[in-house]
Length: 74
Image 1 (cartoon, rainbow, N blue to C red):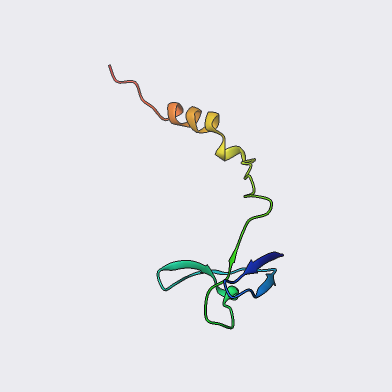
Image 2 (cartoon, rainbow, N blue to C red):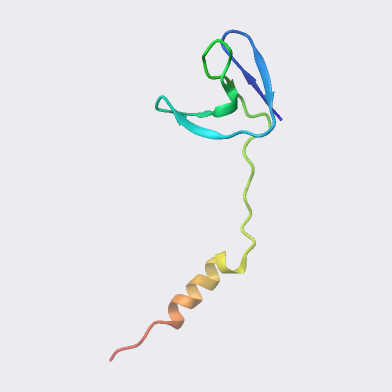
């Protein structure tokens, strides 16, 4: 759960967030405060690191496929 804080002092814990474009800014839809302002949060653990484990995403495999399809014209 993420802790959201408003400038008026109210806090709210939100488990599932939905991001949306409101008034020209990307905000969490569930983080609308009773005072009418959007609450904000600070990441506690940082952003997750995505690890690419699929074989099709390997740079070496893509490189090999590229050369396999190449033709030599003399």
